[in-house]
Figure (cartoon, rainbow, N blue to C red):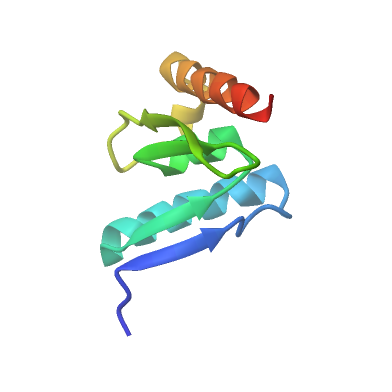
Length: 103
C-alpha cells in the first residue's frame, strides 16, 4: 500500500524533547522521499510550526478553526530553524491564537 495521506495523532507526545526532535526530522525526511502528506495533531506549538506548511488552531468546544497560519520555511528544514527569530515570531503568533481559543 502507498497511502497519500497519513493521520498522526500526537505520535511523539510522550517522548523527551531530544528524541521528539530527532523523530520530527526523520518524519520530514520521509515526507520528502515518499511524497505523502500528513495531518499532524500536536499540543506542541514549536513542533507544529517546525513540521508544517500550515498550522490550524482549533477551539476546544465546539471544535472550530480559530486561526490559520501559513508557514514560510522551505524544505528540507535544518534543525537550527528552531532557533531563528522568524520561527519564534510565528510560534508566538500561534500561541496568541491558541490562548484566544481557550477563552
